[in-house]
Length: 126
Image 1 (cartoon, rainbow, N blue to C red):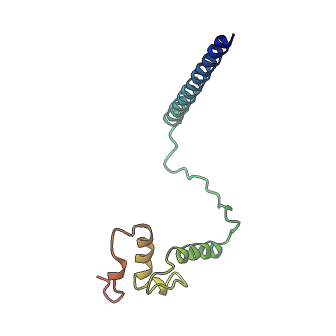
Image 2: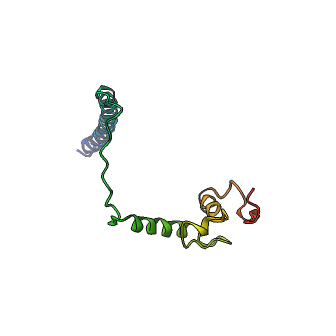
Image 3: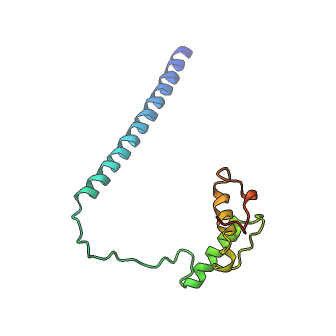
């Protein structure tokens, strides 16, 4: 009968809601268990001697292994963050930063509400 079909679809809708809640609960508890396991592992690892040096490997993530290549990438990033700022033309890491305006422009690009860049003057460094 049509009434029975209605009930079965309602109960299947209820079942799917219950299944979704179970899944979410399992995900939450698994996340909590993972966090707990991480903290336990961190606390249970033996402390290393202070004079043991960590083993560092040079990152190849940019496909650049030389220091000059990395400096060039950093210089390009600084340029991209300071485009449009008056009195800023970043060409190197020495003379272009000497008056402080490039540094202020870089900081201002991340925190524009903290100070008014247009009120800065390169001759007044104090």
